[in-house]
Image 1 (cartoon, rainbow, N blue to C red):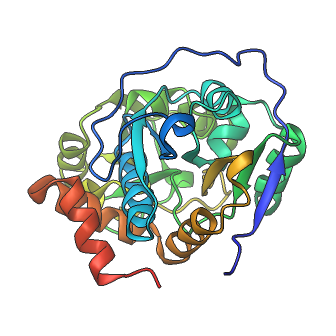
Image 2: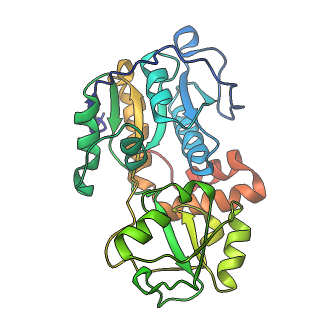
Image 3: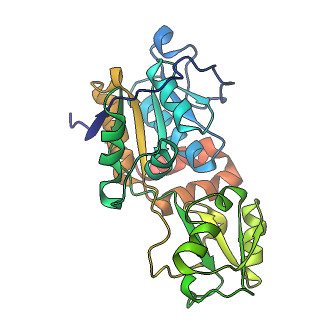
Length: 285
C-alpha cells in the first residue's frame, strides 16, 4: 500500500496534559478513547471547514475498516499539538500558515512553509502532505476589476473579527499598500456577502460557500498569505498504512471548490450526509 508522504516533527511544548474537551457528536464513530478502543480520535474545531475535513477523515477511515471518533477541541495550535503528544488525539486537520504563526515559526518562503514548520517543531507529531485546500483569506468584490492597490479611504472593507488581527488584514493593507479603507466587522458570512453585493469589499475564509458568486480582488504585491491544509498525526500512527492511505487519497482529491460544495450541501442536508454524498461521487480506492 502506498504510504502518504509525511514529515516527522518533534514538538517541545510545556502544556502536555491539557484538559479534554466536550466530544463532538460523531457521525462515523465508535466509543472509547484511542488507547481503550482502538478508535482513531480525530480533532475538529468550531471552524466549518475543519469540521468538514474531520468528517471526511472519519468516514474515509470507517469505509476502510477502521473505527473513528470526532472530538471538538480548541483551535489553538499549541493545545492541539500537546494533546496529540499526550495521546488524547490521533489525527487533526490543520493549516500550515496558521500553525506557523501561532508557534512563531520563521518562514519567509511560501513554498517551504510546511518544511519550515517541520524543522521548527522537530519530531513527535507527523505532518502529512498538504491538500489543495487553501484556508487563507480571500478579498472579494461584486464584479472583477478591483485591486487592493486601488483602495481609497472611502472604500468599505467588511470582514470577520478574526481577520482584524491577521497580518494580512487591516495592518497588512496599511503596511504593504499604504491603504486605510473604512473597516467594519461582520461575522456572519451571508450578511457579509450581501454587503459585498451592495458595493463593499469583503474578506472571506477560502472555503466559505457564501462567497461562491463573488469575484477576486487583485493582490499585486502578494500581501495575502496562503494557508495550505495539512493533517497532523500522532507519531505512533505514522506506520498505520490505512490511516496514511486514507489521508493521502483525500488530500489528492480535495480543493477549495470541493469543500465549498460540501459546506453548501451541508446547509441543506446536514454535514454527515453531505460528506457521504461527496465520497460516493469521489470514492476512495
